[in-house]
Amino acid sequence: MAIDYQHLKNRAFAPIAQHYTERDTMLYALSLGLGNDPLDAGALPFVYEGAQGGLRALPTQAVVLGYPGFWAREPDTGIDWVKLLHGEQRVRWHQPLPADCEVVGRNGITHLIDKGEGKGAILVMERRLETQAGALLATLQQVTFLRGDGGYSQLKGGQPSDAPLSALQPTPQDRAPDFSDSQAIRPEAALLYRLMGDYNPLHADPAVAAKAGFERPILHGLASYGLVAHALLRQCAGGDPARLKALDIRFAAPVYPGETLVTEIWRVPGQPGQLQLRARVAERDKVVLSHGFAELA
Image 1 (cartoon, rainbow, N blue to C red):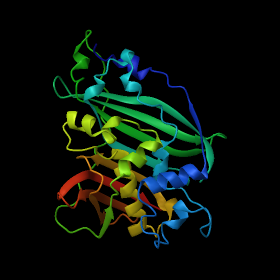
Image 2 (cartoon, rainbow, N blue to C red):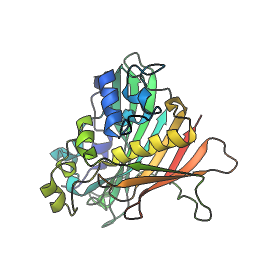
Image 3 (cartoon, helix red, strand yellow):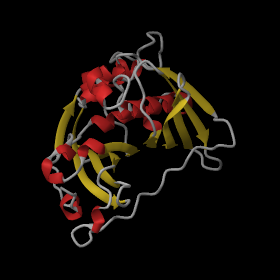
């Protein structure tokens, strides 16, 4: 069954109402490794309600809120879901996330782009994360690579293909990064992060991981995204989550729990508050997140 452009673009997603508590906020931060060092005062505001100023939410907690689930697996989509990959994540924050809040996720498909037969297609889903009162907290774009669905626009007499999103830019090759941050990923990190709602066995079951071609369960891409965001806050924002306004990243390669993630950050000349970044695994010297862009207030 091939994908149908109009069917997917018109697909209705019911609003996802969710109440997260301070406990959920602390668990999210703990799943990313905050608190690994019990003497790290910079981590306390995200994992301890008694910290000075009260508990604060990491901005990237937005990615696990108001999520519609793995809808691409439903038969009517026509998507070859076994071959899909989460290619990029882009987020804009409009105000800081509260530590405890009732939110609504409003999801919809904004782009469907045909790269051609054998080359795959790109699907972009946008989520507006709002409070129950309608205040906009964040706008998220999840870019998914449908590896098995290229060429759909040539079927059924020809179907539309949307214009692509603006391309993310690679990090500078002619100069060293301005900041570098190293984070040890706990061996059980994927088992903790799956409690955020992504129960794909690829991140827990060694047998499933082996069938997918991995030596052991891999870390969720969005967990790596959260790790990079926290590195940005530590290195460039004085640990203040309210300063992060945008973060875009491309997922370039898998990360394994137990590895060390090194985030490298460059200032954008002449653009105060704008940064480029990438992350690599130290043990394999492998770039795992690339084409990163961030904006700080």
